[in-house]
Image (cartoon, rainbow, N blue to C red; front, side, top):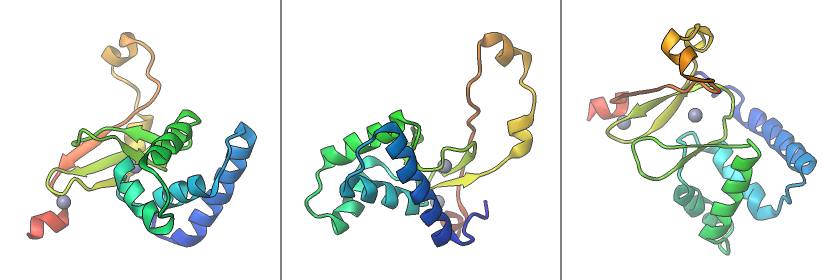
Length: 151
Ligand SMILES: [Zn+2]
Ligand SMILES: [Zn+2]
């Protein structure tokens, strides 16, 4: 969970990688789209499209919510971001497309990444193996975060 080291440096690297991937897929990377991705990358809270919109708006006042929706849909289509649903009806977006799990606070709805390699590597129970083909493992642990416990 300790992914705050050199966050600035890391996100610069990821951003460069992102540009390269977009180029290779032929995704037109406008200034607005780059800002959308940058905001998402810096966000640690797994924001919704509306959250991203209001944050990008501070930098790019002319941007529309529709542009944000379309950019996120494109990024998702090419596997550059992950879309998921948790406690809210609204979809949340995750720039971290590598295997990881989520800790979800049922009070403030904050979503925090965590790794659990033992679970990722564990062999599947027979029910899951016989059910079909598992493509991805995703686990969400729900509870009350430290900040909310203090209140
Ligand atoms: Zn909380
Ligand atoms: Zn995540």
